[in-house]
Length: 462
Ligand code: FAD
Ligand code: NAI
Image (cartoon, rainbow, N blue to C red; front, side):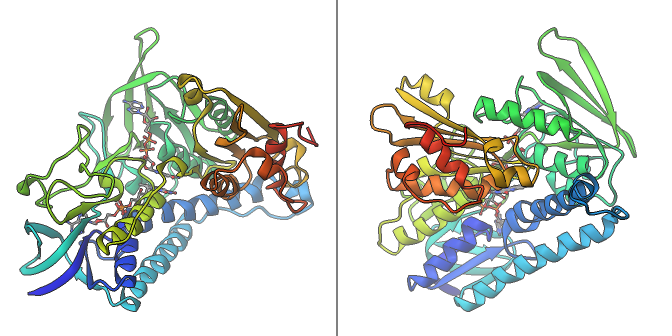
């Protein structure tokens, strides 16, 4: 039997970051992970592999669509999907072994296997019983399918199967126009697959700024993705190498169906707690089945904390990481804090989409008096040079104080550009603060400054 100050269950971005911060704060720490490799959903079957495939397929798309426009002539590359998958696996391995290195460096014990909380302050892994003053549950999430749809990860797949396909299918139906559906749909459409996205709502990406969602849909359509909106999927009939997706159009209740080689079910994720033992200790859940915590990530069971996808809030790696650091600080007797009002969200399509803070729709609903500063990437020289002038930046500020309330953009490197506004919001900055900051030329970030200028006397290149 071993005794720890903290045992963290789960080594995703929430768990491993929490373990490192605990160790840095002088706490004797162990991490429990049942997978063969560390890093959780994010590194093994989520953020990292999807971004590797997005990168490779984007390069292919550039080579086949834009190279000749720039005078880069010659034979176009062809897709060797096996090699592309090997590249992806290599990227995963580099990252997961990097986390293993960090565990060793910080003297964190990796307890290999599936952990069960067998009593307060006790975690059992296999036959080994470990004691801990504090337990942090960071057990993450798993795909949630639709009732009656059976996943075989070959013909009817979740994101995990979609990342592992042995070849590029001729056709794919994606159920759900959320983040996974659009990112994975983009990958396969770029590689030559006929992709149709079927979405329940009458718009894509619920919760996103409506104007951005429309622009994204239009751009993806141009890239070859087909959309069926307002369609409630009823069932999927799967055969050995094909499947039929049956849906009802909500506006007139008509039934329709589409055949495809592969069906990707991307209708959201749910908290993962199988055999965790939390319920056995009287652990309380929210109505949506997440572990309930207070504002210091304490559950109702003494000495047990929870963070990341298994609790409320956006299911994002960086949200899990922030909670991981903050809960470690709480356990160490410090003041851990997460500013939930400033958590960016990014969709890694081309162009990228990024947002932080309130949307225009939310501000209207809340009756806030706000101003909008908009700037199109058409006025940004650098964006035009890389064929990405189509997007725009929308900055939302308080009409009286000029304080930044939100920012939404679609355009080149949007996922990086958004952080200028995240920092500004953390400092409670105004649009004028951003507008007065010198931005290097020619950069995409000049578009952020122009949107800030548009909140005042006007953008220069509009
Ligand atoms: P997880 O990463 O899910 O890790 C939990 C770990 O706990 C798992 O490894 C699991 O095996 C382990 N575990 C669970 N129970 C036990 C137990 N009892 N004993 C031992 N081990 C246990 N987010 C982003 O921010 N950006 C992205 O680009 C992005 N892309 C994504 C792409 C895809 C395809 C998917 C599916 C998700 C993506 N996400 C992305 C979401 C992101 O992966 C999650 O928000 C993040 O991984 C949550 O981290 P976590 O630490 O809470 O849990
Ligand atoms: P999601 O919640 O983003 O989207 C699910 C979509 O499915 C919604 O648009 C919903 O309306 C639709 N849907 C639900 N039921 C349906 C039905 N019966 N028929 C048709 N459509 C239906 O969930 P998704 O894409 O599965 O992603 C899960 C989580 O993973 C997200 O919460 C996201 O935060 C995270 N993620 C983040 C990424 C990023 O940050 N870039 C990338 C990938 C995933």
